[in-house]
Length: 167
Image 1 (cartoon, rainbow, N blue to C red):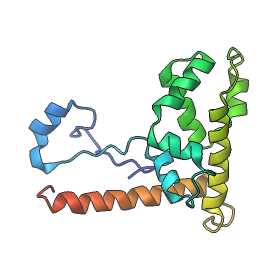
Image 2 (image 1 turned 180 degrees about the vertical axis):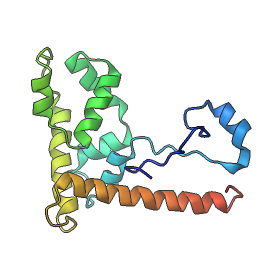
Image 3 (image 1 turned 120 degrees about the vertical axis):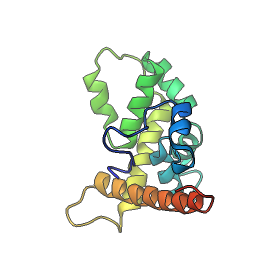
């Protein structure tokens, strides 16, 4: 596992192969799981229950498309770039620094995006309050905490799939 992502090594891997090729090649010897931008979803599940405090995190975790479209339209950028921007913000990038690096972007920053950034900063503070190692940044501690949850999810998936005959 590298940074929360599990993948095959070497030439005999099927990660980028079409699904039909994977099934034909591996059958019941392999299984696939895509945690689909799990970081914000895991954060949404780790923060203390408070629907008002974490409204944008919860909305984004539930359905990423509306905010991505809103950002793409506001900044006049492709949806893929909006997705990449939001994901980088989830991982701690500064929206202000991104805006400075893109002087051609003149559109107003959507309120919901600013709110998401503020909630993410608050969530990092809450989630790492008693979790940070000496000298560790909030970003590193948050990533470490989320990766621990991802690893637990993978262990549970492995046990569940093994119980159904998958190796």
